Length: 554
Image 1 (cartoon, rainbow, N blue to C red):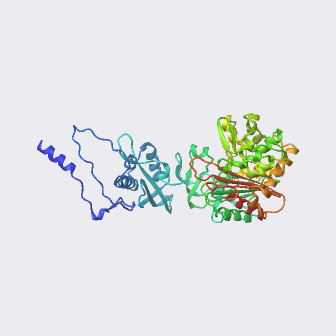
Image 2: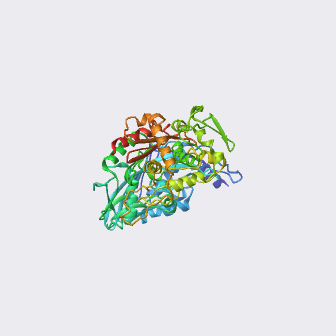
Image 3: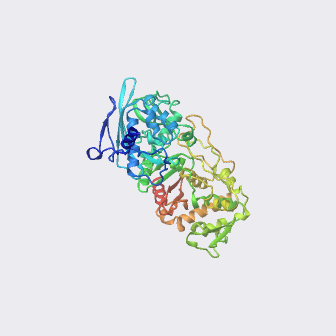
């Protein structure tokens, strides 16, 4: 009994803190030194057998966060995969990725340096060497982990996601070093100049997409690379494999695009002025993409975004109403403060109304109720058919040369159908889609946008099954022209001369204080659209970006 008691007493004793709460651990040869967090490691309190263990709840303490992060990072750096995985909330998912970090990605001599924790998040830097068949190259990047409390027993653990290993990884992806799956490509602008991420920050995802589609077809030879190999979930979102480090150069093949170097540079400059902005510029008569840029270059929102387009959707809704005889540009049209449909009460911005006004006035001021008031006279699938048959949207068959989201106008009923008429509900678009909408209005015919000529690989471009009646088309152009001159788009379009038309939009998003601002317009043989997420009204946010590009083009 005496011996057992002394053991229990020793277990209750907490360890001493050494050297101002900072220690340095030197791990195996080649693994490097790792600076541990301050705070010391607190031993578990001893618990008598007849005591019932209590499950700890509530926010994590700083000591719990730093101790958990230290245990994980130290084990990872030391190559102790089972121990590192055991500190996560999903060991079965963590173990193969941590194993593959050395075995498949061929990363060695890893040094992990933690930053200052913020709440339950711990940033850290990674330095190592990628070594493959006699070729070595240094690797350095930053990542972060989050510590969570397991509900079952209150134990602090690393909240495992693949991005902990490398921030470019999505869950299901892998890191792999070896001969690249596809040869590199040299992407060229329409004048034959090389397009690079260094010159055009937005083009990273586009260049990755071009390589994936044309690397083998363009006749290049693969090099040796460390790259992200996408899993099923990422591929379902049209994300391409990504090169992280090139150990030896391959021989690239050349792929010519439709991008205009001067307009692309201007687009990059414009989106740099507004956080979370994206823009696309098209040639109306052909569908050629002349410029595409994103303020956040990690994801190609311009082509792959899936966002409610707000009142820019009223261009499509207007062609539907005009065609069905439910509206006419110069005839009186209701624009009340409120309209209830499907048990939802809709209203206009600032609850305005237009008494005895025309449909043209309602379009120019972006009156919501002018459109939703017509919902009772429409079938649930009318808007979806209009978008598909006239504008080529929502059929998932665009082939521009890189991955795209081709718009979605689902068939909805009741209040959701009413909301879709003003670009809310389930309607989703991106700047490429909405630039194409303006181009279709200006041209009178849908021309599928493209970045690489179909002559390069014999692709078949998407077609629309019909065009708008001449009367509908002329009235729709009148509405957009009037809006550019006198409506909500007038301020942005001031100084944009020639044959012009425009439409603004603001899309409410749950959880956002400010709506997403949209703008779509055409001038001559050019059409463009842009979005500023969480920007506010489209006329003052996305409008100047679009107008600047239209002024430049010819």
